Amino acid sequence: MNKIQHSFNLLKNFVEKESFKGYDPYDGLNSKLFNAIPFFRKSRFLRLAWIQLFKRNPINFRKIVGIKKEYNPKGLGLFLIGYCNLYEQQPKEEYLKKIKHLSKVIVNLQSPGYSGACWGYNFDWQARAFFQPKHTPTVVATSFIVEALLRAYTITKDQVVLDVVISSAQFVLKDLNRTYDKNRNFSFSYSPQDSTQVFNASLLGAKLLSQIYNITKDKSLLKEAKKAVQFVCDHQQKDGSWSYGTLPFHQWIDSFHTGYNLECIYEYQKYSDDTSYSKNIEIGMNYYLNNFFLDNGASKYYNNHLYPIDIHAPAQVVVTLYKLGLDKQNKQLVDKVLGWTIQNMQDQKGYFYYQKQKYFTTKIPYIRWAQSWMFYALSYRLKDE
Image (tube, rainbow, N blue to C red; front, side):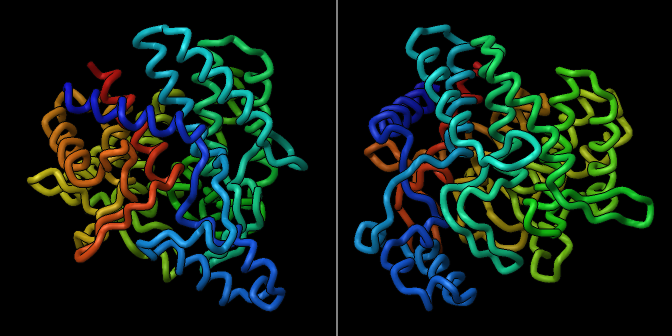
């Protein structure tokens, strides 16, 4: 336990020194150089290639091409949850100040012009399926931030924060697109600008509605959440796994999105008292624990090969097991995973690496993808004590 506490203290010192700002694996299109060339900026292929160049490169060229360290709203949300965990363990004024500060920054970073509070990322993002301009809100970013603000509200009782949280349900209900199946169940889109069926994203929308229901007791929120949960559970494989989504190039199975799915279905079940998905959770959890973690504690990204070892994977298993109440019975696994991760993926300066490949490690200290996730995860492990 001392090793985990020491690791967390190093990380906490690092992120506070950086004022919670940093780079992101996908922030390549923030480059001043890239944006100064109109032909580059307008080409879908070049946008995608430029992002991948920076995402996959173990050497950080961001300063050279004019990419600045910035706040990432989702990252701030994860840090906020971490400080709420610390405050609930030990109500220090230091933690309370951070909770109030981060809550204020997050509220001010909302994406305007939508039906309810929502958040996106601080960079343009070209995926294979769609293009997202900077600050385009996504259900993924919004759901994590709403959870963070809810946690903050329980501590600060700030009515402004609560009003923002409640309004976010309207973003999910009115601004996201829906893809229906033959039974009129549906998948929420990733953002208002696409119609993809990404299972974890849709479930995060259902989770958000369930959490807002717990405040307002508006049963219509649970009705819509159930349809989204049913859609994803209908796409679960017999072995308990899920692919990332329905598109042909979304057919991989990975660790942390599996963890998201389990957490979201469980959260819906907790707030709705609808236990009809207990079997889905059970077989999904069995698949998760039996396919993504090695005996030495290393965490696999994909179900069918080891590399890359991505920092998201060990972070998510800590949170998933804690939230599903399975942390005690899997304590040995959690500590083995964290032990390996701290030993192999934490720098002496306190930050965590992004990914380990077979022949090299990307050590760039990404603020959202690595630091916020490990801060979030380690705070749950410390809370567990």
